[in-house]
Image (cartoon, rainbow, N blue to C red):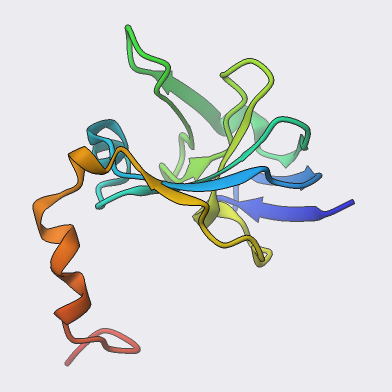
Length: 133
């Protein structure tokens, strides 16, 4: 059985995920753009993996957008995205909150009709290993 370990940015919240992920979606919907502040969310999904909070569970809070199934769990201290179990029988884990490597490649881009206008042209943008001087 696969085990993944993760945490929030400030280290208050720590967790483990036992089991495998079924899919890895890069979601371009407007809700994911808003709650990540980026072009898309990168979320891992599992119907069978089990989440165990190791520390800071009292710092985990969730928000569900009224009238939708869109949910985000996060650390109330630093705002980092965290795993969500708000949808019945589905664990959603933001890939960036994992401290262990994920061997699964993204399954698909979803909700691409909402893709940010600037997202398609990023292949031509210069790359730097750190903050440019």
